Image (cartoon, protein in one colour):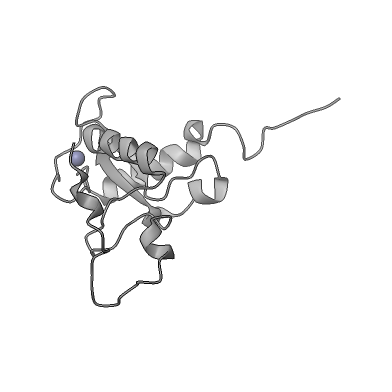
Amino acid sequence: MTTTGGKGTGKPYNTARWKATRERILLRDLYTCQMPGCGCGLTTGRTHPRAAVVDHKTPHRGDPDLFWCGDDGLQSLCATCHNRLKQRLEAHGFSNQIGVDGFPVDKRHPWYAGPHWLPGNGRPPGGLNGAGS
Ligand SMILES: [Zn+2]
């Protein structure tokens, strides 16, 4: 008898653990979109532009270690901000969201790999934010 799967892999979004985590993050963020400049109140609807999405700041791409990254790696977003973020991710391969501390939230952001890391500068060079739409 061969049994495959059933442990760890599969669809973590369907697990009770994720549901509990999601609830905890939404409560922590007071059902408010954490995208700087947005801050809208979140609803529970699935298709609403303000529907609550709990987002991984660093894309997990199916990696369980990244998926269960801990509460600090998660944020509440509205569906609109989340979709915008995902479109950027697909275009660049990383999130170029800048956190409230002025640093990119995605550790895969090339800024972290560059040698031009200037403490105190506060912002990554290059103006990646200005792409617009
Ligand atoms: Zn938002």
